[in-house]
Image (cartoon, rainbow, N blue to C red; front, side):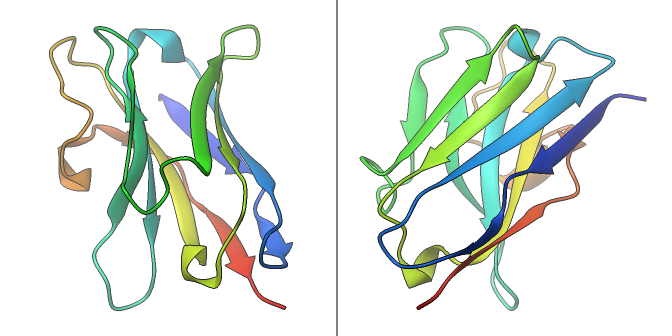
Length: 126
């Protein structure tokens, strides 16, 4: 069973930083399209950053561009989301996701992704 496990969430003050990790097991994450999503109660899960399998160009939601950075640590088979200049509106459960289709466009709705982690809570508050 392919598995994604997120870590790195927590409580941070506005303006702070966090590094979220998504460790993949039983598959090579660099061979998949990858995405980070977030969800708050009462709202639909939204994508914040992703990379397609084909070209590895990073895509970002407008509200996070310049503050979030998605990357892959191939040595650790882990997807990283570096989050800087955190704002209260970034508070959410953050999920990583992967899709095996080589033609999968990573800016796809959350329900198009094949595999999901369990999520990690990020709370931004003073």
